[in-house]
Structure formats: structure tokens, C-alpha cells
Amino acid sequence: MRQYEVTFIVDPVLSGDEVKSTVNTYKKLLEDAGCTIVNLDEMGLRQLAYPINRRNTGVYFCIEFQPTSGEAIDSMELSFRRDERIMRFLTVKLDKYGIKYNDDKRNGRIGSSKKEEVKKEEVKSAKTEKAAPKKEAPKKEETSKKEEAPVAVEENNTPVEKADVTPTDNEGDKA
Image (cartoon, rainbow, N blue to C red):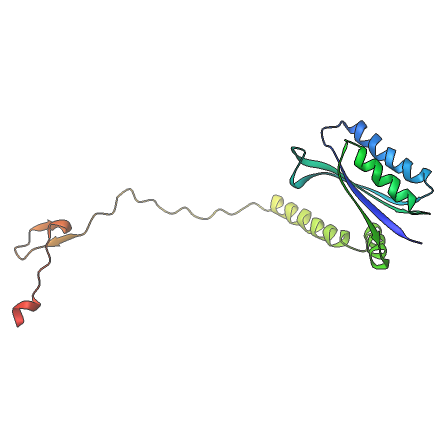
């Protein structure tokens, strides 16, 4: 049987109840059309790549479903276009690899195990850092003296500023 997923972005200005009622509206629309809902994924509030209707964020939802006919998809997409609460939507037909990937992801065989291991390691390292006192590096002594400009000394041992010294060309004397 064919399987589709529709991802849509709901306007973030709506209250939480209005967002949930919007999602339930489309879920009910699909069920009334004879579709089987495989999964409903609330991805939450996310940053948009570019502004849509002067909004920089949106509430993302993804519904995986198996329709009995293609008419359900057409009626759903028409409803999305007419609804002002929906900022964008995308309907995709999943191939066998997409179906397997989504199933594996839902069952924790992809992605979550690595994230869980990383989180466990972070928790362990945070606990060991709290338990062991941190050793501070010894502070370097600050010198209050400023570096002085180099001083040139003439033949009669009187100091002269570097800027006052004029270079002499002794090579011309040898010729």
C-alpha cells in the first residue's frame, strides 16, 4: 500500500490550543477520507530559513498516512491552501526506503542511540567535574614597567633618542 507524509508549518502566533485544533482538523480530515494515520510527529517551534508572512519561526508537524485513494490528498492540499493558519506544506510519497527509515527512526534504531550515548557521557563528565575541584593555573606576575624605547649611545657616551640618530653612510668614504 502507498504511504505518504505531509509536513506543514502552522503560524506561531496562534495559541497552543489553536495549534492543536488545527492539527486535529487535518488529522480528522484524513481519517474521514479513509486514510490510516501511521504516525503524527510534532517537531515543535523551529526557526525558518527565510521569513514567511513576516514570521521567522513556525510550528512544524509531520503526518504519515496511507490513503485509500488519491482524492484524499487532493482535498487535504486544497484545505491547506485555503487555511490562513498554515504557512507552508509539503506532501511526499514515500518509497520503501523512506518507509523503512521512518520506521527505524521511530523505533530508536537510528539517531537516538548515539544522542543518548552522548548525553550520558556529558552527564558523567559533568558529575566528575563537580566532584573534583578545578586546579587553577598559577597567575603570571604582571610587570608595571612599560617597555622603554631603545636608546642609542654616541661616541662620547651620551644617550640620544633613536629618532634623533641619523644614519651615516660609511660606504661612500671607502671609494
